[in-house]
Structures are given as C-alpha cells and as structure tokens.
Image (tube, rainbow, N blue to C red; front, top):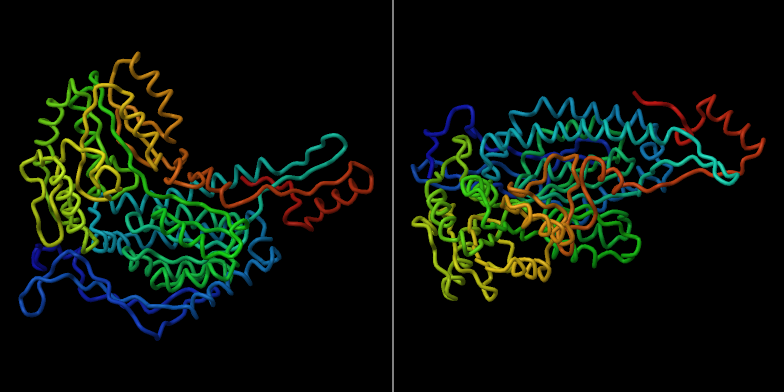
Length: 531
C-alpha cells in the first residue's frame, strides 16, 4: 500500500523505537531480556525496494518473575491498607495525578503518531483520543473533589455519629484494549489510582509502544509501587499474578472469554471485585418513520468508524420491510463511496491493525454467502494485504456466524422485520446487552419501544449511533457485555468501597474527634473542603 516516500515527513517512522524500560516500584528500570518486534500493517518500502509491514519498534517480553515483582511492589505499596498511597490525604493524591497529566500533555505529538501507526486510527480520531483522555483525567479529578466535599462531614443518627467516606479496595490488575489503548485503558487505570488503590498495568498487544512516552511520567508522579507498568504476553504475566490470589480487583476491557479465564485463575473468586467492559452486538433498529438521510449517515459512522473496531459499534441492522429497499439502496451507495487511505489522510477506512483480521472477516462473509446471504454493495469484500472492504450482507439469518459473533471489523449484517417484536425477542435472547440505536420519528411507535429497550440494554440512542461519550454518562452493559459501570463518576465508586468511622455520641468521643480535626491528626477523619 503506501510507500515511505508518500508519507508526510511529520508522520514518518525514521527508526524503530526500542522500548527497553518499564516501571517498577516507582523507578524507570532498564530491560535487558528478550524483546518482541512491533510491526504495523501499514506498508513501507524496505531497503530492497519491496513493500513490507513497517517495523515500529521492540517491546520487552517479560515473564513470571517480572510479573510477581510488579505484584509484590503493588502489594507492598498498599501494605494491607497502611501504605503511603491508600492513607494519603485526598488533596495530595490529586496533586500527584495533576503532575502526571501535565507531563502527559507534553507527549501529545508522539502518542498521536504511534496511535496512527500501531492501530491504524486516523489522525482526527487519534488526536481526539489523546485530548479526550486528558480531559477525562481532569474531569475525574473534579469529580473526586466533589465526592470528597460531600464526605467532609459527620452524621448523627440514633445517637451514633458517623464519618462516611470512600476507601480503596486494594491491588488492581489493569488490562486495557487495543482499539482505545489510551482512553479506554485510562478509564480503568486513573480512577483506580486516584481512589487509593495500587496497580499493575499491562498495555494491550496493539497500541503498546504509545505507552513508552508516558513511562517517565508514571515513574516520577506517584510514590513507589502505586503504578507498575509491565510488558509481555497476557498469559505469561497475568496468569501468575491472578494465581497468587493477591489481586483485589480485575479491571479489564476486552472479551468475556478472557475475563472468565482470568477469574478462574484466582483462588478466592468471592474476594475478587470485577470491573469489566466486554463485547457487544449493538443493533440498529430502523422504523418506517425514520428520516432516511439522517439514518444512513448515522449508520455509516455507527458501523464503520474505526472500521467497526469498537465495542460501541452498530454490529447488526434491523430494517423494517416498508423501508428496507430504500435504506439499502442509499446505504450501500454510501458505503461504496468510502475511501480507504492512510491514517494521516483522515479517511474513515484505514488499514486493520490485526494481520489476520481480513481473513477472519472473509470467513464470516463466506459463511453467510453459503447460507443464503448476498453482498449488496459492489465493492464489498474487495481484498488487499491489510484490508477487506466493508461488505453489506443481506438477508442475515440466525444460522450464520455473523449473526452471533461480534465481528469487530468492516462487515455489516442486515436483517429485515415486519413486527417490532422480532428484534426485541432476538435482543432478549442475545448474550449481549450494551446499547441500541433506534431510528424513527413516530412517537407512538417510539415511546413503547424505548420503554422495552431500556430493560434490555444500558443505553438507548435515539436517531444517533451508539457511542461511549460523553464520559460523564454511565457506560455499562447487561449479560456478557459488562460487569460494573464506568464513567467519570461511576468509575470512582467502582474502584472504591464505602467505609466509615462510627462512635456513640457522648462527650468522650466528641472530645477525641474535635482534637483529631483541630490538629489534623488523621487523613481519613477530616472535614477539609477541597476547592
């Protein structure tokens, strides 16, 4: 595909990045062991003049020894709740996070460039992911201040005084996804840290090099052991960590099979808190009263933004028989008009980061075709070394793989219906329940439909594509789509527990509390008001 001479100078990879550092016990340490190549599916011209996958860099291949060292560091930093970080004043933890995000903001250009090369995300979306992550951190700080202000008081009920605050859970294993290796990962990591937990963070397989510019900030912003950053294959580093039984929270955005496998490794599952963002099969439901131009526009972005590699993507479209032909004609033409280009060209369609993803998408297409579906758009299924052009498949039936599997790529299954109960029943029987998009304008149709859908998924989008943002809104799912609720506010609660000091309301206790408050002897017992 693209040759090196065609790449703007700003975005060229001049030489591979050797990532030979990691963060352990508050130190930026050198790695002297084995490393793995990181390659981009974006092609470049090699020294021989041939096109090949671009070598982006090398990352440490760590194993059990390093994994357990990181675990030990996090455990010692928490120190059964007595560590510096979990007992620190809220204001001091906030200052640490502010120091981190200030340093992070200086690395924008490097991280954005690596986002484009590592996962093929276009320039606008890469910049947006970085900026959104910075904004998320500041919003989290503000939300934590509000939460703390609400707790800066004593309550008196039935002769018992109580000082109720939120406290950390312990040691957190944080595993983020490749499609949003910064934003989604930090939506786990940041609230976990700020609430006083200590963490072990392993970046995703794709989008791993972009963490390199941030390692120094992690090392010098937090006390030893609060953030430990390790690299390697998940099964080699996550397995011994989970088997130890010393992990209090598993924070993962990925696939339910990975979440189940990791849970099964923990010897005390009843003690393991889960914060999980998992797969989804979000439907779009197109009613006869839908505004067709608006619907097509939203379905294009909903199905194909970042090539459909989003858990919030529309992954199946249900179209009413009355408008099926009209919708499909316009939709297929719009899909075929899309251009495939390089990330810095800001096209909607860009190379797929997973080398075997085109073959997987092809297998879904072939299976559907063998069972009666057709490719409705002219360019559907066109192949290149690192891409397969989006295929609109119709009619999709329940015996097809594409009906059940979260395709996580550029293929769009379409199913028609006459009775609205058809998509409702299928959604209720699905293993997933994250979001749905409903397109229509007839309120008599929409009102009862919305009333039903809110009990099947966690977000109903009216005449708009599924999405996560704004980050202050709840982000969750039913069944296999999530465990726990993420957002700026919800995440703070997900990574903490309500804990409190209680005492009988008598003179002795009043005097003790008064002394503690006046002399600021306790970081927990405090009525300080954070501005």
